Length: 379
Image (tube, rainbow, N blue to C red):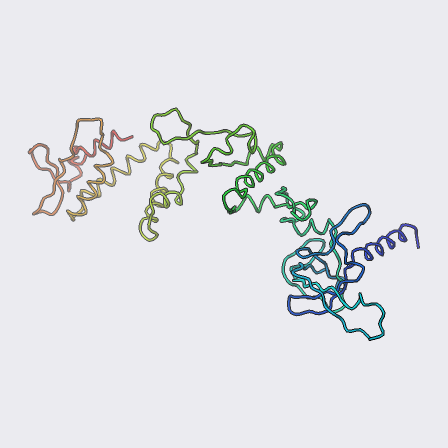
């Protein structure tokens, strides 16, 4: 056997002797009882100069079942008396320390996965986790994902709590707690660590955008979260010297935003909003959006004056008047389009003059109306 193989073998035997806790005594569903070895009833273990916490309630342990590594968490511990022969001379060994362990997950290819894949067998070894294995359990991200540090375990500050950047910032998250529990500090730590890790990368600076609404002024200081920020001091006062959040039309003109602002109903109002936004985007995609919109209004007016229903026709005319009314002008009240009760149609009459019907387009009656002329001025 070569020297390096002997060294690896000796290291394996050393780790097994130090990290072994005991063996499985019983299995009851997800609850596993472990009988602790007598020499492991100490609070700490010294391994290669590192002081490691020994087995205790709240800690994690590993079960070796063949080539599988199963992970459990210690829920409780107790002492059990063992019946010994009367002539046995070691009364201290009458009592055995028992751990109650709840199964949580397993290691697969070096990655920790939650869930019960299988259960240990009676007699399987129970082993303490080393620092690297602890780190894998408390890392909320795969090995190929970028992570940031959120904090450390209270029971062992050497174990860093890492979270995946993609899974954390690309979804909805909530930070809950009582007053003074550290919610604001946690949020600031998240973003500070994020900018601390990626703030010098050009791709991150070009593509990543964050908006932080700070109602209490906790993050507006120059050094809070990151110095790479722009602070907008917002106010509801009209005409005040306050900033405004710059938002693009693509961000504002979204159906979901209008649904919320208008409390739109699903069956009637939401489809209308979608059509309205689709028409707006279609008009602004043309070379001359104003001329395109004026053409739509002219066609709509032509359809209105051809209607045979006075009630609906008058309603749509009122909508168009509201759109085309120039509040700064002294002008037209758009009363030159009237309804003929006998003929059941609209007609044009200006200041009691001659009545002209819209049935003959060759006469250009529609072009005489104040609404049609208002469309020409619409912009």
